[in-house]
Image 1 (tube, rainbow, N blue to C red):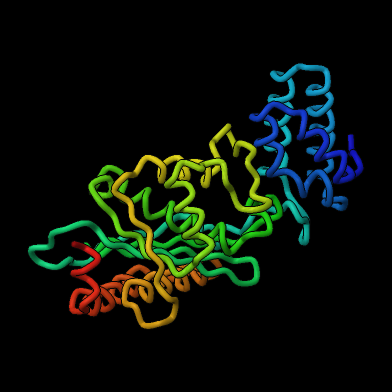
Image 2: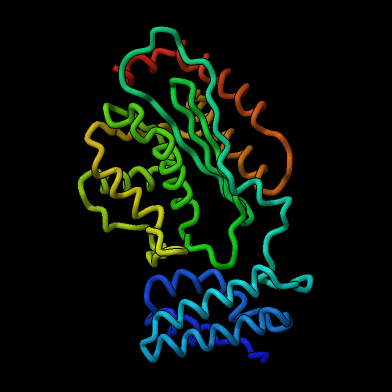
Length: 294
């Protein structure tokens, strides 16, 4: 049976009292619940969501999760009309959701702590992240923000911090614990990292959604804050953006490529590798490189 769209206050109120697992499952269906009035399969899913929230109010979390699963099935497998706000992203645009990573040859006989730079770019709802490490490792990730994205209003700041998380995921257990100098051109992001480094891991950007993600996953910035607090060898330093600093310019360029990669389908890996290799040559011949790595 078709169900009318829910007022935003009704949807948010139901999520506020839902168990974390149910709230995470239904968050991605926000557009279906509140906006997709002209879509038949979203109408069926809304009926299931209404029953799901009724089960929550009656304290039956098991039934609520089962109904949320059914609603997800209709949204993911159903046929949506053109313009439906809940319609899944076309297959050709999903490539930007997978991080691209690589490694170019590093300097011979390299010693000292690792030095890395991260950066993020955001424009018209599309984000790109980039990082580069002075041993030759690099990575980038891009995506388009959806209506259920938990980022909040501080999108640029959150993206800068997510770029750091992307880097640390790559370095996990491979040299970062012994010592890492991290260069950022974002002073707000640097202040959050230093606060987390001091143990103030509860400090988060304004409006960032702290509810568990799908299947109960911990939000990425919450995981990042805990990780930073456990890295005694981490130093975070500011570098002026667009000033010609080789590592910062490399990270910025990777973020730009990643943002375009999120909305276009093309092979950008070879181009990114060549760009990183050129910037790293400049970095290892600059006077700053030996001082930071000491």
